[in-house]
Every structure is written in structure tokens, then in C-alpha cells.
Length: 459
Ligand SMILES: Nc1nc2c(ncn2[C@@H]2O[C@H](COP(=O)(O)OP(=O)(O)OP(=O)(O)O)[C@@H](O)[C@H]2O)c(=O)[nH]1
Ligand SMILES: [Mg+2]
Image 1: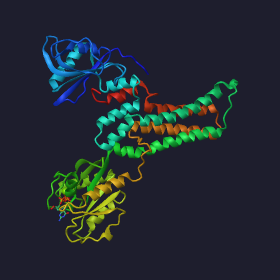
Image 2: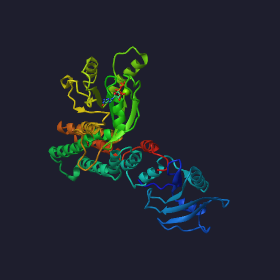
Image 3: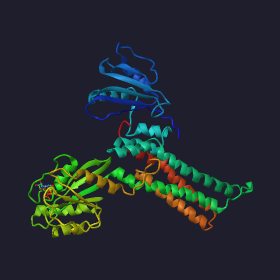
Image 4: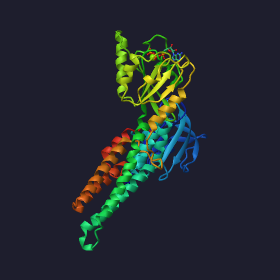
């Protein structure tokens, strides 16, 4: 795909707000000319040539000779630029007024406002990066945790694309071989034994499966996990939330029933994004407001990935604890035995869940790190990273892999059942097409537009 674009696009590439510097970026064959018209050196000279990748210091000046800002400008000439087109960057002061005025001037002189993600879309359409890499760039920008960033860097650098191309290449080879036999029987190319085709398809299937097996871990990295703190009133749930967040987020009092609503916050444990919810203590109550809170506590257990069940070690295990235990029985649970700074009265034998038990004291700030470690271990247990760091984090990629897998399985069945080769090759082609949507070889224009429209302005 190599498309020459007629128009030059421009956008503010830095976030809107106040900052030390801000950048207006242009891409396209008019961008150098536009820059020439608005940039003057400190001494007021208009340049008619910009060296590649050299910073020039001077002013952006409007049509009336009015200075708009003091800037640094740089030109990155085609094809060695982000978009493979001439790119101009104007580094001005990071206030919204100079940025907007410079953008306005660029538009006046012939650029057009870039759509969201249009620079990257051009990089893709001009063949500098493939679709999965483009998505990797965007995922890096939107990363909230280090592990999200790490996974997107692999993708941006092309590790996933390489894997996909290799699998797709093998399938294409097999298909080509089959098609030659079908299309040119007079060439006398020998049909290979079915076992050979079976072997290659099984090989592709194994690799697709391996990638898919990373998707579960990928999902956790993408979305994070939801951890819900539950327990009867006054056991120290809100204290635990505050300890994990290292701030006094929730109100803590010695009155049972203090927390009435669900409080949700985010934190990062070893780079893992954790959405953590503190809930109202669960008990039978006649207080209408508290009852609504208890209902919400129960609701939030339903879609929790992990439950932190807090118990008061200084009180005997009672019916309220037992009821809660029944409600979380089918969840992944960590039992938090809190208030261990007081004499321990609770009998551990009453905890009949298959859950690690962690002794804590919120007043002594004891056991917090054990909880964090335990959350991480439980969530990460059995999750697969592919050998070389390739991780399927994107739902679109996962769905494409599932489709590819289904087609390969169909092709295998067809071969095993002696169905004619031309039908087998249709299944293999469909598998190749599905894989091609990941890297962008076989995507429709609509899908491309949809993907890039979710990007941010100026990238
Ligand atoms: N001794 C001791 N007291 C604690 C500990 N953790 C919490 N508390 C106290 O227990 C009381 C209740 O703490 P909260 O964190 O509000 O308990 P909660 O489970 O959120 O209570 P509700 O919101 O009412 O359900 C407060 O007075 C805390 O100071 C602990 O480890 N040891
Ligand atoms: Mg509370």
C-alpha cells in the first residue's frame, strides 16, 4: 500500500493545557512551503531552505508581520519521517493561544486540520508501519501501567506482527502449493501426501493457540482486575482500602455501618492495574440507606476477579461471617485476618474456604505488602507470556486469531475426511485473511477508518 496524499495535514500534537512547550505538527508535501511563509529567523530573515532534521531558532510571524511566538522548528524530510512524508514540527510555548494561532496560520497557508490519528494512519497507508504496530503506538499513549506500556512497546516494535506474518506465510505457502496442483494439473506437480498438509496446518494451529493462550494475561494487562473488599461491618475494610492506597480516601470510624456506598479507586501492584472497591459492611439491617449499601456490596461481588474478605481476629467468627463466606464461596478469595494487634479470638478452623489467610493490623500497618503480593500471585498464576514477550492484549487481534483458528480446524477436518483440495484451500485462505486483518494486509477501508478514528488528535 503506497498512496500519495495530495493534502498537507496539521494539528496540535501536545495536550491542550498549559505546558513549557507545545508542538504543532504538519505532514505532507506543502509543509515546508507553509513553514517558509510563517517562520523567520531571529534577525527577521525568511529562509528558503531547511536542512533535514536541523533545529532552527526564530519566530512565527503572521501575515501582518506580528510575532506570534518564539519557536524552534525542525523539518523531517520524506521518506525518512513518521509518515514517510515531509514533516514539520514547530515547538512553541505550551499555551493554548500560541498553539492555536500557529495552527490557524498553517491552515490559512494551505494545510488542513488533521483528523484523529491521521498522522499514524498515513504512516500505515504509506507502508512505514503495519496496523498492529499502529495500534501498539496508540496503546502505549493510553497506557496506565508499566505492564501495559511494556506490552504495547513489543507490539509497536513489530514483535506480534512478525509472529502473525510467519504463521500466515506458512499457511500461504501451503495454500499456494495446493492451488498450483488444482490450477495447473498439466504441470505434473505432485500432490504431496495428505500427512504433509496436515503437519503444516497443525503446526500453524499450534502457533495460533500459543498466541491465544497469552490473551488471558493480555486482558488483565489491558483492563486490569477488579478486587472487592467485603466483610461484616467494622472489621477494617475501609482501613484496608486506605492502607493499600496509602492515603485516607475512605472514612474510618468505630461505628459499624460507616461506609454506605461503594468506593472505587485504582492502584498499581507491580505494574498490574487494580481497580479496588471498598464496600458497605454486609449485615441484616433495618436502616434503609445501609440496606441499599449492602445490596451494592453484594452486587459488586458478582463481577469481582478477586475478593478480599476481611475478618476481625479479635472477635469470634459469627453467623454474619458465615453468611458472607457462603456468598463468596465460588470466588477467588484472600482472607484478611485483621486487628491481629489485639488478642486473637477467632478460630481459623471456621474459615472453610480454600483461600490464603493473611494476618494484618491496619493500626500497625502490618501485612499490607503480603496482601499485595498475594493479589499479584493469584492473578498471575498460570498466565502465559509467549517466549519472546509477545502478548495479545488487543481484543480485535484476539478475535481475528479465533477466526483464523476456526478456519484452520475446518481445513484440517476437510483434509482428514478426504474432501477435495480446492475446498480445503478456501478454508486456508479464510484463515490467512483473518490473520491479515491483524497486520492490516486484508482490512477494509471502513475498519481502517474506525481504528484510526479512536486515536487522539495530533498523532
Ligand atoms: N485495633 C485495631 N483496630 C482497627 C484495625 N483496623 C481497623 N481498626 C479500627 O476498626 C474500626 C473500623 O474500621 P473501618 O476501616 O471503618 O471498618 P469497616 O470494615 O470499613 O467498617 P464499615 O464501613 O462500618 O463496614 C475503626 O475504629 C478502625 O480504627 C486494626 O488492625 N486493629
Ligand atoms: Mg468502611
